[in-house]
Length: 142
Image (cartoon, rainbow, N blue to C red; front, side):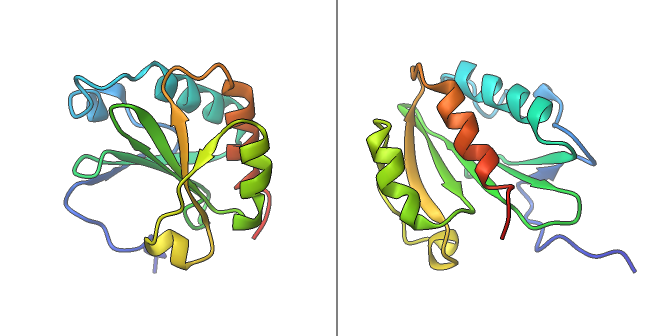
């Protein structure tokens, strides 16, 4: 029997592997700035072997995992920023703040599970490599 990856909502579309086709999510994000999210998606595909993507068209978020592992990253697309929840210790907040990022922790399922939540990344950031460094960290362990 194939292991099921959590409850599938009617708004969630999962790739079989890799990234979803742009047509799956671009219409939902019409009117939102997307160059940063496009860049992040490309870099994750290049740098995280076996990454898989899902998109929730209702909440406008991308989720990422590898293989049969659990989700490691959620990227919520908002008008002003990306809000990122990472499967890393919340103790990294001070390091992210030292790099100039704003963290507004959220009391959501991920926050209650011990994730670092509420990382605000402006669409016009010039710190894309720092963002990718932290996203990759979410895949380094448990």
